Length: 305
Image (cartoon, rainbow, N blue to C red):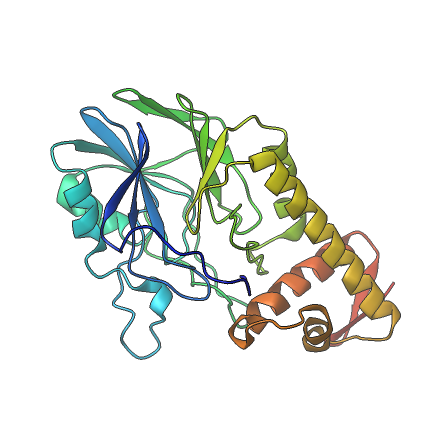
């Protein structure tokens, strides 16, 4: 989520843009407060075959109750145009929110490519969701574990387990170029939503620390611009989350007990459409603090332990 000014994208939805010799991007037509300019589908490979990372959404975004961030009209066709003359050897998904994985199925139907990557996950939420719901129909042919690799013509991709935003989140490292496809785990335009019960703040912080220790050259997230100084950004994100934790503890020390009041005090000038996302992240922090014995729940409120 972000209350910053929009990043002006350089391409239109459906167009293909080359980022480096082995990396292209196709933008899905699903901009929203939670997807920024839309989901970015990454195509890896310049030879006879390619891998497609985060094929994106399939919904129209127009029907009642169908949010804009799952609008995938024409996106599979755009991926097929971008890969014309090449075989899609693998369809990779970083996680199973509905703006990332649903297009894996029509893309597989069109190409016969296996769906590979994160484990399936379908959870009933315990409260209002602030981002896209989970894709309950996601069915991978192969689940990758941390460190597993797949390879094609001139490219090698390694799975990097990064739970936190979701418990099944993976990043994908391109061995040949030092690039890391970070899904929703690390983005330059926004901090990731960590929404319980599946989102876990302790796991998210551990995954950030894991990436900080890596030597990746550049990050390509699923939303927003590439990250050209990865360790600097991750260090800042770790500091930001620790600052949020200190803010929560100060609010509790002042007697603020309810999450909506904490959000009101902590997120000045926030887009009202993002208050739900902020509340979910505050809850994730509180659950982490509770597990560490720092705070405790008291009915629907929170107090210092």
